Image (cartoon, rainbow, N blue to C red; front, side, top):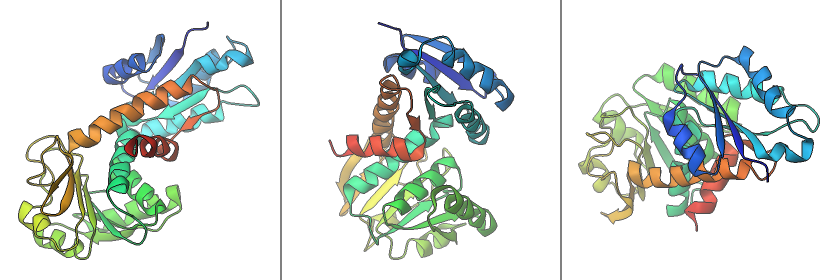
Length: 288
């Protein structure tokens, strides 16, 4: 039996130890870790996978793109896919800074807790990679998604990026203070907090008394949490008539999905795990 070999293409100078551990736990027998990778480096690295094994054995080789810079990772991911031709290809996954697995897990948790079609879902402080991806995935389920930022110009640019990437329309709103947050949450059935670590976005008094909210989710695990009163460990805890998901509750699913996607890459040589494919795996686990 051939060994499962994973090529780790990382945009940081030191390849992520986190991603390496998950890779081994997911069934990679050996990790070929490359740091400081640029798009110009990618083709020769991918060719190293393609031309060393026969076509039937290419399923035992795969590539993972990571690092802390999501935009740079997307460029590597595109370069990797452009390196394939005919049957010469390997499965590849993008998860720079956990962007795809975190967004997929958060969206899957919300989807599992309520019907999404026609419902208003607010993604607070959602202009970053996780927020944009979660917004695109939730809108793809038929939700009326509103993305927020402290600056309207910034969130409008993020909404255009979501539309270009996912082919969905997402609303933009400014929420620079608690009053702005209260305004944007009017009529919402779910809220996902995607703010920076240690930044509080939703006071407990607001979400607990909200007449329409069914789900409150928060990806921040660093105190103070994004949603006040929602403990990081909660995974569907019910309080005040709402289902509550904290960062560790979402993170447990994120880790299962990360490992599962990596493991599946060694079953065939043509899988492409970007946001949508990773979300499909997250939905499998969220309902199992």
